[in-house]
Length: 308
Image (tube, rainbow, N blue to C red):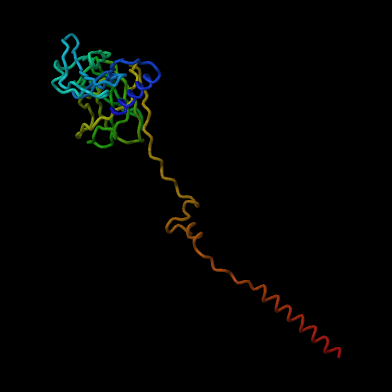
């Protein structure tokens, strides 16, 4: 993905130069935008330099925590026209929060400054949901009640379901994701197979992708599985939400006369009928005609003998 971004940037800049948007002796530098949130101190900032005379360049990156001083990153003095600065733990010098970045490019005696980009470092998971309980409202449907945590960066709640009393809360058991406003009370209905006892588990996620601990009604052990990225649900309204049911397995078709054909012990196989050689049947008609002809000839012969 990072290589793709770099390639696109270079392509756009080359088009810009070839179209006459850059003049001889021009120097410029651009930084690509960062995601709004980061949940790790290990990420990269990508840059692209325009140097129309193809002179050697030196590129450096600077970082600032909102309200703090600017500092140069540990990785420095890059000489490629397009590249990346890999941030190290020591570059993030003041814990979580919003960080700003800009870069400089120097060629010959000229130095230019890039655009400023920002991202928010958030490595703290949200609190778990509270006030959770469930109610069986029909042979197929359960109604779940819970309160979203009050974290300001809360985004959604994942709901997991299993027939087993012990299971793993991961993509294989996840049945719904519900948009959540901080502190919002939710009521959600989830359906399944008729007359089956289901157990549920809930986990909250924030905008950075951090995930909370598990709240569950399962009497066994629920293991926290890996959380894959998912589409963002709209923020909930507090009203009762219907969740799309998971597709059930298609019922096995009842064998018909057609489906029975070809089954073992179920009659003649269509394949066998196509591949097998049929035994030719011998017709008796030629013999009957020959016999009739002989009788007619014998009758004529006897009639002439009597006339003589």
